Amino acid sequence: MSARGGRQVPIGYSAADVRDILVDTANYVSCNNNDNSESEFFGLNSYSWCGSASNAQLSGYDVIASDFASSSIPVFFSEYGCNTPSPRVFDEVPYIYGGNMADISGGLVYEWTQEPDNFGLVQVNADGSLTLLQDYVNLAGQYATLNRQALMTQNSTATSITAPACNANLISTSGFNTNFNLPAPPNGHRA
Image (tube, rainbow, N blue to C red; front, side, top):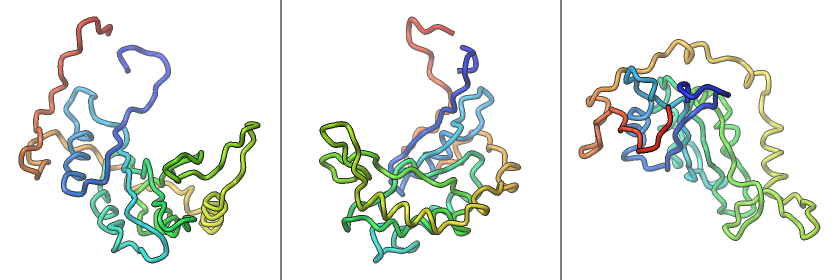
């Protein structure tokens, strides 16, 4: 993108919550290969915290917090919000935005409009108007409990972390690709 000029848009990676390769994937896309190919953020799609019966240990959020405590790039939930039980209670919100996950940069609840998969926060009516669903009300209630002042503070420790150099020893999963060189651009590519 920097070679093309224009508006700078962060480029990142969003991963499924596959714990066996999650950290390796993050290491692979965020290491410094001296060619500006590293990701600028890492998103995680996680639906492991499901309702009031869950907690940091059952969902594995405590492990996620630990695994990404020294990330050199912002890490956030690119999707979260398990839809069982229904309506959702979003009990994970205080944990995600609390001190236990200070190195995680929040998250995006899946999803805005109600679709057949039943993850919506709003129902789009035939006339184009919106009806707020109970999930929306519950999520807004959880957000209202957060300490907004604490959320606006900068994590000074994170700003001093530099990306590790790309190296095969960053990867622990056997069979994982440890070739950190960017592939050649396809024919017709314009620099």
